[in-house]
Amino acid sequence: MRLSDAARALAGAFWLGASSCAAQAAAPPPVVTPGECVAALRNVHAGSGPKAFASAYVFSHDYAYGEWAAGVARGQSLWHKRGTTWCKVQTGTDALDERTIIGYGVPAADARALVAQMASTAQIAPPQPPKDVRHH
Image 1 (tube, rainbow, N blue to C red):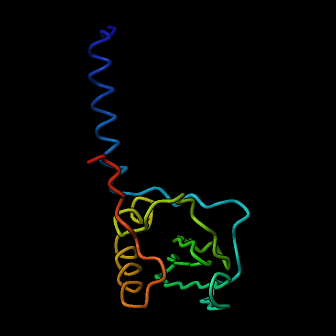
Image 2: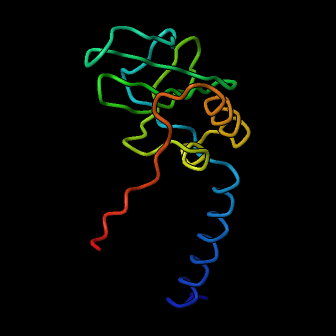
Image 3: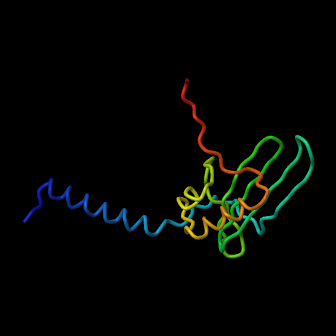
């Protein structure tokens, strides 16, 4: 007995929907940037003025969230511990708030802890909401 194309499409849609629910329950592991692994993440405050550099990191289990500033440039980074090294997670230019961090495969409890710890310190580059580029 052969299934019609419509029946196969319906079965495929059901399977895809069911697998999506399972995927939401278990986030994929973070995608780390090859070659961007370090032995340690350190808070640094060096220089002054346009040549100043600062970085700050907070940790929760095998994850770290960092903020950095170099002159007028600012940014955030997300790290995943692999063995004894910290490897950078590919986040692009996303503002790393709790929801975004979870989207990169970090467990919700760790994401919440990272954001809470960073918010309780003197932040260097807090997440910024997307800019409104509509013309008025």
